[in-house]
Structures are given as structure tokens and as C-alpha cells.
Image (cartoon, rainbow, N blue to C red; front, side, top):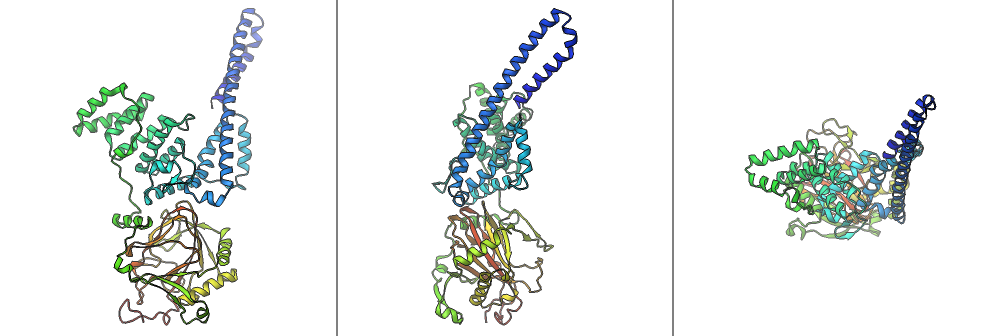
Length: 548
């Protein structure tokens, strides 16, 4: 921007010179003034060239960084993007970082290039600001669910293993800013604090201390740390003495401390004044309150959900000891030749895992058919039955019909053979892919009392079958908080359970969730099977949960 200002100054000087030229030549005294004008033009032009050289050096640095990132990503795109930090940085490079590049370019002839890029936006895929927000929120979700240390994450480490290059102070600042914009002051403090510490280590600054302190001070106060907020605001005012909000806030913080009887602290703080030294910002000394999960889910249940996602063993050992594995045939002639491997994962509700029930070829066919049709996953509004996107389900899905490929027919037929249920009243095969921090918070597949579900005319969803179509390096478990069960994705296996009791009432113990994917890509496909046509295949007994 400085370059533009300088060039405009030069233009104005030229315009002024031309405006009075007709009157200047009549007197040497007036002509002498033009020498001064020319000197000013030379000085401004020299400054402008220097600014342009600085701008070009900036662009070269951007180019080197983008080339470096691209080379790293292109070696193995899938492996690179399976790391959530890399995925976040890629989105960030193509959103907020690219905006910085555009700002530098549009200071001069670069605006022409930007216009050309704009023309291609319909053909090229550019992430939106919403994508940047989503990627940042996903990292926060992973950080909370898997108890990831902020500094380790900023260093590119996940669960003690180095996965990516470290984040810059600017990267951390952007994560903090996104959290702040979402009203999440807990993560704002964590990431602005990390940005502040990283800034001290950087030779080429990627953020400013002022920018960081503006967010950090207020969010520290919002988390209940008034003393620290006062100190940070005081530091901000040393940099920008007339910062309007800072001046207002520091007075407010002093009033709060005075009301709390913290007069001694105020005196010590004022005495320290200019003699205070900059020390590393330590969030461990602060009182921080992590935001709760989705509204409506009790804190205790949310905590259990996260513990199961982390792989903590919560199931009663006595119950676990009764679980068995065996071969089953279900009186299907083909299975007498090749029995199905069945693992009993839960007794009540009865939940089983079938191993090696889908082939690699079938998986690849399903993924290929779904790939171009993947759309943001939706959930059905419990009041209206309408499908709508939501923050508590982050994935993309596509539905496949049996008529699309013989492999889909075989997968559907196999589900019917294994479960003994009629597939004529099952929904189309839903193929899902979970990306950065992809998850689906605790929910039920069946419609509960008072809820509205899409009406196929087949009744409620009596059962769920889920194929696991990929292994996941870390995270991505399917957990059942009510029964303390975690199922880990294993390519080629499938999970099956009944959502309803034999009498048609919903089984609340089947509440389940898809944990956030920490590293890797998670592919699943599922069939929701409905009540109609199952009357004689799963008849009810004399009690609500009795099997015939």
C-alpha cells in the first residue's frame, strides 16, 4: 500500500507542476522553484522504487514458500492431506494467506494478474472463508477431543509424532482470530498465547505484537483472568498509547480489581511500570474453561464420549469377558463354503462386527461412484423432517442405487444374507467420507418419539449396517457412550445393530457417534433398514425386548 501512496504523491506533484507551467517561464524566480519540485519528484520516485523492490522481495518469499509447500504436498497428496495440520495450512494458504499475496500484488500492475485469476475462479476450486473457519474449528475439535498440547500441535506434532512443519506466529494468530470470531475465548487464549511466544523466536515476523495482544488481552479477561488481562492491556498501550479500546478496558479492569480488593496488586503493577520485562506467555498459570459440547448433551456424557474417542477402556471387564468371536452361516448355502467371521462387541444391545465382508474391488467401486457426487452431509430436522447441514455432523456423502453397479447389488444382497432382513425396505447405500476433523456427534439413527423422519412408507429404521471402507491412522472410532463401547475402523469389516426393540420402540442404548478423524481419511458406507417386511424375519415376543 505504501507504494501506491508514494506513486500518487508523485502524480500529484506532476499535476501541480503542469497546472502552473504557463506562468512559471515568465520569471526565473518561478523557474527556480521547479528545481525544488524536480528534487521532490526524484526523492519520491526513488522511495517508490525502493518500496517496489521491497514488494517484489515479498512476492519472491511468497513464491518460495508456495513452491516449497507444493513440493512437499505433491510427493504423496493423500498422505499429506491425511494430516489435519497440513489440511488446515493448505486451506489457509489459499484463503487468508492468498489475500495477503493479492494485497501486495494489487499495489501495482499485480491487479491485472489478480483480475485474470478472478476470471478462472469458476474453473478452479478456491476454498471460501467458511472453509477456513471450518478448518480452524476442526483443529480446535481435535485439540479438545484428543487432549493435544497447543505447543506440540504448533510444532507439527500429533500424539508425539512429527507429521508436518511447524506453524508460524501468523498461523497461530489466525487460529486464535477464528476462535475469537466464533466466541470461543478459551482457544483464543491458547493460540494467541502460542502466537506471542512464537513471535519472539521469528526473525521474519509473520504477525505483530499489537495484533496478538488486542485479542489475547480481552479473551484472557473473558476467561476470568482480570489481573493478567490488565497486564496484557498495559503492554498493548505501551505499543499503542492511544488505543481506544485498550484505554477503556484497562480502566474497567482496574475497577474490577478494586472491587475485588486487589489494591495491592494494582500498586505492584503500577510500580513495575516501564521496568517490567517481556516473559514467555504461560497459559498454564491461567484459569481457563473449555467450552462445552453441543447444546443438549450433558457434560458428563460429553466427557465420556471424548474418553471413548481417545481409546480409554470404560466397559465393565465382567461384560467384556463374555464377548466372543465365532463363524456363522445363517443357513445361507454360500456361507457353508465361506463362513462369516462374527465378533460380538456388545451383549445389550446386541452389536456385532463382521470381518472381511466387503472386498477391495467393491470398496473402490463404491468410492469411485460416490466421489463426484459427494455433498455436505445433512441431518433430518426432528421437528420438520427436512434435511439440513449442521455443525455437529461434518462429512460428505452420496447415495448409490443398486442399479448403478453389480458390486452395489452384491453388497446389498450380502447385508440381507448376513442379517436375515429384507433389503426391499432399506434405504440406498450411503457412502461417507470424513475430512479434516470429520465427525458426527452422539445421535440416534431411528426417529424417537415426537421426532419426524423422512417418510418412505416403511416405518422406522429398525437396524443399521455400516461398512468400514478404509483404515484410519488415528481417531475416527465409532463410539456408543451408553454402553462404553468403541469400534475402530478396519477396512473390509462391518458393524451391525438393531435400533429398535422387537416391539418397535427405540433402543436408547444405541446412541452412537463418529469420533473426529485425527490423521488419515475415513470412508464408510451404511444401509438403514426399515421395519416394513421384517415382521416375520424379526418377530416380537411377549416382552418389549424379547426375541423370538
